[in-house]
Every structure is written in C-alpha cells, then in structure tokens.
Amino acid sequence: MPFRRTHNSDALTVKGLLMRVQPVHSCVMIKVIPKCYLVQPSDHCAHSKLMLLDVVRLMESSECLQGHLNSPAEVTRPCLCSVSRLGLDFSQNPQMLTGAWTEYSNFPENYLKGCKWAPDGSCILTNSADNVLRVYNLPPEIYSYNWDLLPEMSPVLRMAEGDTIYDYCWYPKMNSLEPDTCFLASSSRDNPVHVWDAFYGEVRASFRPYNHLDELTAAHSLCFSPDGAQLYCGFDKTVRVFYTERPGRDCEERPTVVKKQGQSGIISCFGFSPCQSVYACGSYSRCAGLYSCQDGTLLALLPTRHHGGLTHLLFSPDGNYLYTGGRKDPEILCWDLREPGKVVFSLKRNVATNQRIYFDLDQSGRYLLSGDTEGVVSVWDTHTAPPDGNEELLQPQLRFQAYWDCTNGISIHPFMPLLATSSGQRQFPWPGDSEGDSASDTEGGGAVMSQQEVRQDNALTLWWAGPLGPAAEENRDHNTAAAEET
Image (cartoon, rainbow, N blue to C red; front, top):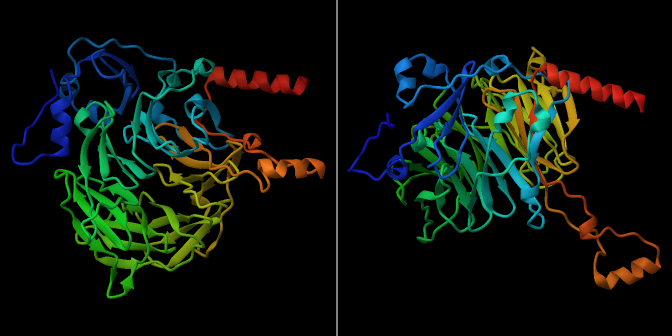
C-alpha cells in the first residue's frame, strides 16, 4: 500500500513540495529487533537509505504497520537485547565504534562545525568548513557486537551551501518512514533559509528574510517549533517567525528590544521548553531571554553572567531548568526558571576560542555532555547537584580524550546509548611562519611550527556509551591482558 497523500490546492506547502516529488516507497524487507525496526527502501530510491524508527507507537496499531508493507516481512532475531532497554553507562569510557575521516581530508582545514542526530535516530547531520551539509546513515552493523567489522562511514548526501553556514536544524517530526517529513533547514551568509530534502539532497523551499531596505539578509540562527509549524530565525535584536506551510518572504517580526529595553545583540541560538509554551533566545550580548510562543512577549531576561556571547542553550526535559553556554566562556550555567535569575550550578569546560562548542542532554535530563577546545569530552551527572540549590561547581563524573583537536559537536542518540562527536578548528601558524623569516629562524636555532606541522583532527566519530556485549567484553579483556604483558 503506498503512503497516504494529501493535496492542498490553496497553499503551496513545504509538505506538499516534498510529497509531489517522492516516489512510492515499497518496503522490501524489515528486520525486526525488539522494539526497533530496520527498514531498507527498494532500489529505485535515490540512495539506499537506512531508516530507523522507534516503533513503540507502530506496535500500538497493526493496521499502521501493515500500511507500510507490500510483502511478507523477513524476521530475524539477533543475539542482542532490546536496544530500547539499554541505557547510558558512564562507569567507563565510551568505546569508539567508527567514524568519518577521509571525507574531511580532501579540503584544506576542512574542520567540522557540529553534528546532530535526526529526531528518529536513523542518520546524523554534520556541518563543516567547506560549507557542505552531510548526512550519514547509522551503520546497520551497530546492532551486532562484531564492531571490528564496522567500516569507515561515508555520507549518503552532500548539500552544498553558497557561503558560510550559520546554523542548521532537523524538522522535529522527521520520520524516515514518511518521506514528506524528511527535511532540514539551513542558513548561510547572504542566502535565504533553505529547506533541504533529506532523501535526495535538493532544495525544496526557501524562506527569504528582508531588512528595512528590502535587502535579503541571512539568519544567524534558526529552530523549528516543537510541532514543526513554525521556523524561528534570529537576527540583530529581532526574531522572525516563518510558517512552514507558506514558503516565501511573509513572516511575523518580533523585536527583542522595545523602547530601548529588552534583549539586545544578535540572536545566536534558540531553545523551546518541552512543557510550556515558552522559548528561550540567546544573544551575543551575553544574556538569555524567555519569550511567549503566542506573541513573542518577553517574560524574563536572565542576568548577564557569561563572559562571552551565548552560542548554545537547552531546556531540561521537565522545563524547570535552562542550560546556557557561550564562546570564550569557561562554564555552562544551569538556571532555575522557577526562580528566574538563580543559577543552580555551573559546569567547567575549556572554551578558548569563539567557536561554537555544543553540549547535549540525554532524554532523562540526567547526563549533560560537552566537548572543549582541548578535545576532551566531559560527562556531568546533574542528579548529583546539591539539593539545597546553593550555586556550586559541579564536578564531571567522567572525562575522556576524544580527539587531539577541538571537540566542537556532541549529540546523544534519541533512544540508543550512542554518542556522535565532531572535531576540528581553524589552525593558525605560529608567528614568524613565512619564507622571509625562515632563514633568520634557522640561523638563530629557533624552531617554528609550519602550517603543515599543525596537528589537525577533523572527524565525525560514533561512540558506544552503553553496556558492552559478550564479544566486546572479551575483546576488551584480551586487549587489557596484552597491554599488561607488554
């Protein structure tokens, strides 16, 4: 049975744009893993995209599952316990599974700028210095403990922007079994906001923001509303809200400064509360504001505690806390929104540059993970915070060296104990690294590091952060014994 389609002749919608170009996807095989399906589309698709879906909601209705099948399913039961039951385990360092390195070695200084799992966990999206968005499928070998067989990851899609990419995000209702929901948005310098088809890598729609001089202006940040109906874009002292069903230039403008009061600066990041109709905006003026989703009314302006402009913020799953981090700022702050302005605790990390360093929370809100400029990933257990609410420095539960270069991106899988990290930063040669200075440096005996000698570590890496299986345990014990013998 083909996918159900709807047609709205009154409005040209993003959903309609995607649906009109999609072929009928016939599922040729389903491998059943407890509470998780692996679905492989037939060969006529643009690429063989591995689609992964948490099918707890599908199991509630057998009719829903039958609607996606044209042939009897091939059922296999692997020797792996239900992935949905495997929680994060930070009693030991995560185990590196695989990654992508070659992809970022063909372009000079092609460092990454973050990574984000798709909402359904089927693939991961990266941004890099060559202004290309890449989509990687989750390797199917991940469901076996034979991790030595994992090949290096290769992107299934490359989406090139015209200039520096400012921000990018997935559509929150993205589901690989429904192609009309598989898209993402990106913003780049001197370009409109593009909506990309995550199946074919083509632009499906554009949102064009204009300034008061009727000149096209680029959004510095963007984020879909939780229901996907709106796209919020950040500008200097302004938030523009586009409706995803109406691509074009029409939008709702919400100034963050009214009568010289409010949140100034460029709006650099967004976050939506999972429980209330509230969103948060971070700005390069080093502060964060809370706004009403209905009309953009300013509800609260948090004190200026950061040393640098905000680059990332996240709500806790219960909506009671807001985590904020900034550039050239050594700490992540946890704010209690029930007492606006109160910092519950702070988390130390090394951020020595203006680069955006992401952090992420797991689904329970217990573990917060972040990289730093030195390539170290830190894991904090927020449940160990003092119950009296007195502000103090929370010590990390675990720290491990993920890269030799900056770890700028980290993303936790929606329902599996998997981590994705990205690395790299712009490298600068030491002073005196030029042909004119080389002779004098040599005569004086001074050693100057050249651009080629600067250590670069540009990569996307997947890590297993759950319980190890029997094969993996045996392999780890073997490696430990070998190390002790040497």
